[in-house]
Length: 320
Image 1 (cartoon, rainbow, N blue to C red):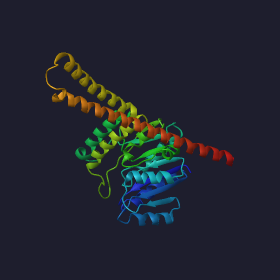
Image 2 (image 1 turned 60 degrees about the horizontal axis):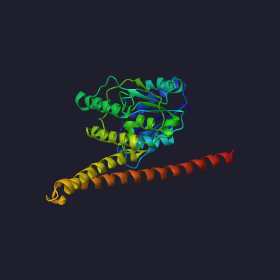
Image 3 (image 1 turned 135 degrees about the vertical axis):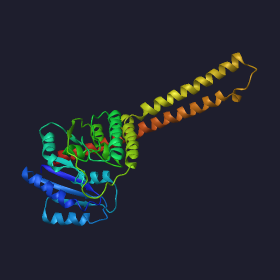
Image 4 (image 1 turned 90 degrees about the horizontal axis):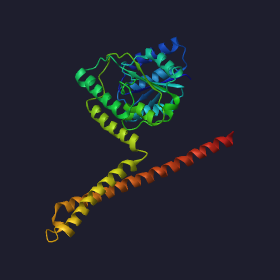
């Protein structure tokens, strides 16, 4: 199978039939072998019934229905686990993504030596104040923090090689940072394509301003995990040693001052510097221990993963 098209959705009953017909038209005109996987993220309208009807008339249509709304990341993760195509396309169900872009995205993966291609909605039909400006700020911060040079991280229209989606785990609200997750997993051939953005035809957006706040918080999380997730001692250990040395330096100064300069002055415990040095040394010790424990946990996980991989290799060899 050449193409798997994954479409996460929530209450998009008006657009599903039109989107399906549009995708099928593009697939047939380009002679693609394909599947369309709708992932219904707990819709409360007739979306799932429409998907079921489409599947009856088109065997290429498949569906996953969540019991309740779990979020776009979980919907994409479920879709990625189920797909079978060599190239995976993700797109939104609101008709703002143009299926006519799919053939060129497919070619960029199969012939352009890319592992992931992200769409760039250069010209948008969204509110300048509530969507465009916050989106530009968000994308600028993501570029600076992650090192991935994309203009539009949150564009729903993306293309992936199959190996990419099978080796990343999209959880929480990390769907915004799939290119960053792919880079951290070792997939560095990431490209970008300017795509057409269309005004919303039906309904209204499911996302509010809070998504940008959550997005920045997730960005900090993924930056921290990507930079220090495999070596927590480099952060916590360094901060711990620094804090401990600062506290020890204060304590040493107070001791020398009491012994040789102000022998008959105030007691050390009457000076605020004593408590500052004590707090600094305690915090430094705790930070160092946090980094040390983190290193032990990571090494234990590596040992577990190594054992699992060994089992898989030996099993495949015995089967051959």
